Every structure is written in structure tokens, then in C-alpha cells.
View 1 (cartoon, rainbow, N blue to C red):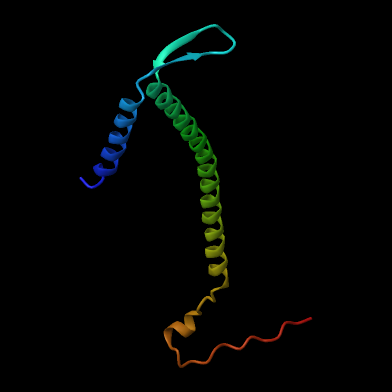
View 2 (view 1 turned 180 degrees about the vertical axis):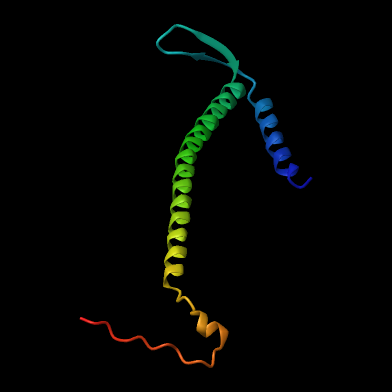
Amino acid sequence: MVRLIPTLVIILILVLFALSNRQDVALGFWPTDFAIQAPLSVAILVGMAIAFFLGAAVVWIDKLGLGRRARRAEAQVARLQAQLAEAELRRTPIATSRSLTDPRLPEPVLPPPEA
């Protein structure tokens, strides 16, 4: 119900505007001799509606590009996380079977490599 209050206020303002501006105006389209008679309020409100929808279309087109960038960034994050997990697995030392059976046993000593 609370969300309807701003909508009702805007509708009330538009109705009062339409009632206050009832005089007819001639709307002509320049390259032609075509003209129509319409109430001033209708002419203004239609112009505002057209501007609103054109602006919404511009924002929507811009949002499509941002969504594409976001999907690419998410895919890159997933690839980097997989690379990080693989690097961490390679870095983790592998426990020998001897140290798993009895931790008190000494670690095996490897002879130095022969040249």
C-alpha cells in the first residue's frame, strides 16, 4: 500500500495538469503540411512519454553491454580460481606412507645425487 502513494500522487498531478491545459494547439510536422489539433496537455504528455521511452531504450542498450562485460569477468574469475586451486594442490607436500603409520619414526634420509 505504501508503494502506491507515490504513484497516486503522480497520477493526481498529471490529471490536474491535463485539466488545467485544455486549450487546443496545432502540431505541425515541418517537412510536410500535415498538422493535427490536440489539447496542450496531451501534446506535452505524449512528448514526455516519448522522451521517457527513448531514455529507457538508451539505458537498456547500455545495460546489455555491461551484462556482457560482467559475464566475461565472472568467467575470468572462475578460470583464475581454478588455476589457483591447481597451483595450491601442486604446492601441498605429499605425506609419505612411513610418516602416516608412525609419526615417531625418523624421516628417511636421501643420499646426495651423483654428478
